[in-house]
Image 1 (cartoon, rainbow, N blue to C red):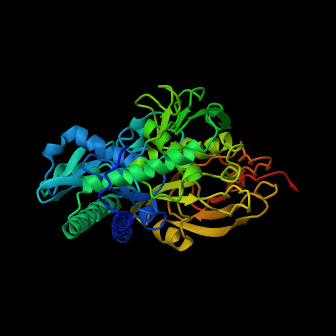
Image 2: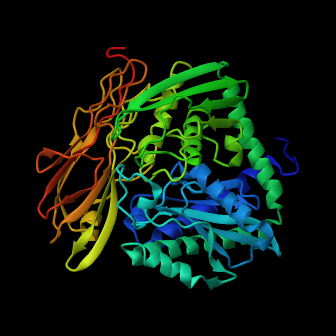
Image 3: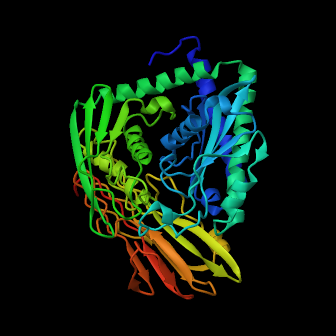
Length: 517
């Protein structure tokens, strides 16, 4: 990519940083305005700014990594669907189609076109995991996307300032907690509009051409990634791992081909798609592949579209990493979150000081729904396992990687749904041993305090296959899930009676290096 040279480096840095600051301010607005704990407490959202072509200019600092690449792609789908010439000030687009967005239905994508002096200059976009999207609860046991809730194909939520009341009613009538869901959606709209206004103010002040500024930013990020890639020895690097599935073990296999300044990742040899909700759409496959390489090669460069131009991913159609519609995908994180440790394992020998042991639980999630005191409730909360150890230090306990999600505070959880937390503590000595020890998991024990049976589902990895260590480090301990002391299958939706006590023990992270090294 050839960059214009009429913006000096100091001005470029100031403008680049300002764009990131604008997005971070809009993200703070979203958190303050959101209704659900998933956004306010758990960071399950992202805000981005794109140019008029849908290319990523800046993203919020606390974004979920999977949204780095998926949300700009969603903007490009909006452009292809409606046509750039059709957009007007006041328009708001919406979709949660997994194949056009982040890979599962609970993530609602919102985009607002930004006009400056009558010209379309970009899009302010956000995505947030809403507290409910109808259908069955999110669970690995779902067998096709139609079970998983309301699928909103690309539509205008607002057209030229006029709200699509029919669409709003459709959403409200198909979710369990409609006030929370629509509250989060309107919070996203407000967030996007605030970002759009900040961009307009920035362009008024600087009189810069955003396309030219973006082109320079893309070129700088692209050059940094290519330089880091070129430092790797050319060659093919392979790795594979097994994960637990409801109907047999699932294999993930990758071959990384490094040729000069570019990296291609081929997932041929991975398992075929399954009639379970752990399938991963291609955009999500690319996002977590690109995130892993960004962490390894150029973590200090702010993310934009140029960061990923030198990376390509392929997976056979009909495989677990490129399923055919209408595959179920609601629990896609159970597979997709394992791509970074898969890639790090492949590159461990050539990047020994950049990789880390595998995380204990890339993500554990609990979904609860039911009624209490005559009112319906639906909530999701997250638990984290131990971080994998690094070459120079132990892994941290109960840390979310690669998802960047926060543990839900006890007080917030108890205030939003009928549960009583009995225990929350570090699960000691569960990280893998090694020259540096993997991070420990956690113990989380709670009692169902509802006055009627509660429907519950889980996303939980590493209950059969532990997190492997890196470069001779030992694996962490597997996770455990109990209901009233008896093993509970996390791959199934369960109905639990009031008073049931659940004990969740998340896995430990993998160690780094052999003991005594």
